[in-house]
Amino acid sequence: MQSLFVEGSSAMHRLSARAKLIVLALLGILLFATTNVALLAAAVAATAAVYLSIGLPLRAALTRLRPVFLTIVIVALFSLAFNPWHEAVIALLRLTALMLFAASVTATTSVTQFMDEITLQARPLERLGLLRADDVGLAVGLVVRFVPEILSRYHAIREAHAARGIKLRPTTVLVPLIILTLKDADNIAAAIDARGIRRHVN
Image 1 (cartoon, rainbow, N blue to C red):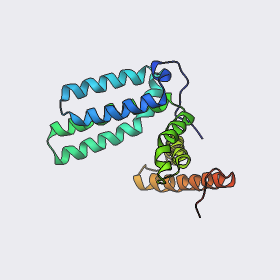
Image 2 (image 1 turned 120 degrees about the vertical axis):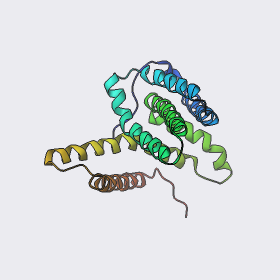
Image 3 (image 1 turned 90 degrees about the horizontal axis):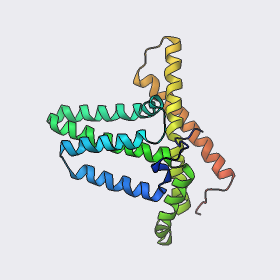
């Protein structure tokens, strides 16, 4: 499986996983606590600078963002259809700033670091009998690893459509994408169970 992690020595790389996740949570709170367009635009500029500082070539950096940004644009257009343009702009700026910083976090934090930090933070809940911390950490790690794999599948399906001269439609892309993703999920679950990584409760 592919990974979103990028080797580097930027300031974001040097921050601990805990610090980055805390900043991401605080940023989300602050972004949704204000409706000031100027402040939100400044947040987009700042998070864009952080993202571009992690060391990715510009083309690769933009390619990574394309699917998520398209989703954000769709959400903003949907908001524009039912709300004043001002609110649509606010939604676009909020989500863009959050997406840029989240992309910076995933690009500078390895899956192992994510899993270790989430597992550690889940330990108190495990002591209360609410969940199994190792299982939560494993689930988060798999989600992070699956994102680039799903994007790779999407590009492969799109290229197959182009090679056959088939017009790209949501139904002709989503159905095979979902089937392939579920198949991969089943294979990974079987591998996890075969190695005894996931604990079962009788």
